[in-house]
Image 1 (cartoon, rainbow, N blue to C red):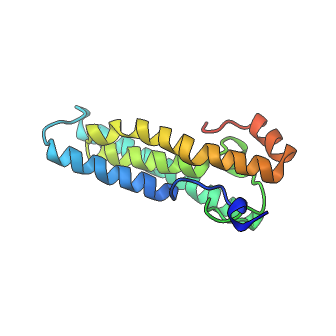
Image 2 (tube, rainbow, N blue to C red):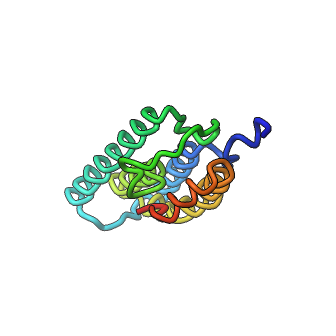
Image 3 (cartoon, helix red, strand yellow):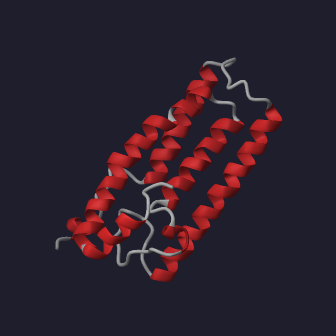
Length: 157
């Protein structure tokens, strides 16, 4: 297996995909001031806190599981183990779910309609440009063990 075969080959680091889309959305929302969600501020901020806490819990839980398994959590590095416990027992992609929740948290807190709308194409890009590539890589590297895990745990929630 060559070095390039031993990585998932994602289109870009996922945090950059989320951050870049968030920046673009917030910039577009800034240009179109006056367009908002219509959700009252206290409700928006309460929802943002809930989303942020959930995102943080997922990210911490996922990171701890990767460290315990001794495998990197970065898809541009070789994976050495499949993590199937903790948050990975109910979602195969807790880090991407956490990033999406954090993205939605900011969009809602900032009352950004355009930013919020951009989450749909962002999730599509992450699915096809990151997740499906990772799944092919993990299936090739871990075979039946990964396929069994994939059958038993949903991709997102």
